Image (cartoon, rainbow, N blue to C red; front, side, top):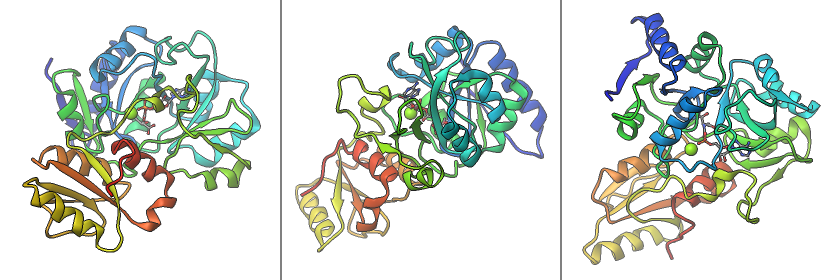
Length: 330
Ligand code: TXA
Ligand code: MG
């Protein structure tokens, strides 16, 4: 299959780009599109065959459910039930935006592979003009995980999607770089108090300011993870990645130690280390692109420099620790 990239530009055949995407989605095929967090790999959430093509293209385990995207709170309310006042308050406060709510699904709407057989569904209204226009024209719920190969960093540029999905999907809508750069916060509204299953740009403090106490999930403490995706290693670059504290010249020493062994080293950090073989930026919106750039180098080892202030950033630390498989350089 030939994969086409269409730049969605107000000046160039915008209408035609959306018509094309809508036709492909309605015919049961998959289309990648930008959201404000990362690029998504979308399919009609009511069509089992279409959704199975997402799992196939990503190489994603079937027990990991997908997030459903809709164009508004009103549309979302047609697909979910037993919606608490806290859930409604979250919709009003954070939608459109980077907050996915886990709610009880209305039965017999979603294909069973969207929810991995669960009675709940993860749903959000994305805050991106291309995603919203696509959803308004499509008039169907769009199941969409991040548009990367399973286990690779989520795509923040159309070219990342193309790299992973070339010849596997027919169309990528190119809306430029995504603004936030990491996936949405996932908040389980079926527990009381609600539980953050995946941290994101919408923080615990911001949510608590609207609905009061919420809990943070500690990850894989039970055998049956509440958010099935949390049990898989994510975002891993090819070379081994270690986190490192940026203190007392430790990074310089580490670079020297690795290079003395004849190995090359890439550093991901807020500041550059001229002695390193490769340097890439570290922030929420640049992390995934930097991990992908490391894969294009011949670095034998990657260090990610964790500044003291970064440790309070749950969302960024969660992605860094997963990418490093919790390894710290010492
Ligand atoms: O920002 C995002 O959320 C992006 C963009 C494309 O919207 N999407 C995304 O989807 O990151 P995905 O499939 O890569 O991550 C979905 C996460 C997984 O951790 C999954 O386990 C969890 O949401 N999830 C989905 N449905 C769930 C459910 N019913 N119960 C618990 N967790 C659920
Ligand atoms: Mg993902």
